[in-house]
Length: 120
Image (cartoon, rainbow, N blue to C red):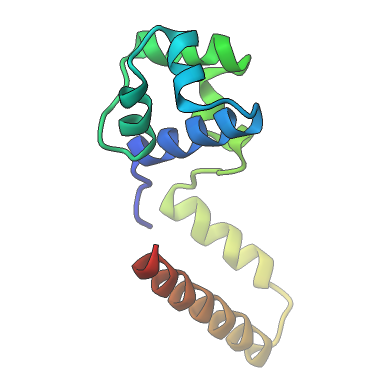
């Protein structure tokens, strides 16, 4: 399983939290004492943030640092083995035909996701 690009995970979370509060990039920049263009660069994944900036963002958004990258943001990060074991456990008790249908469905979802990435 491919590891997520941490810079982009954090970038998406910052944008999501900012928009949830209806703040412009300029408003967020003012709150954390950075230039507005820096917020745009962070959200596009062009620039990385320091731990100090991450800490400041956590204070402003009133969230824990782990929420930028972990389960709390709805994105659980699995290890390959753990992921495989979870899938196998889910499929126990199903016939070979039913397992094949599940596999084909997942495969199709991944194809669609790849196609969507090309357009975004």
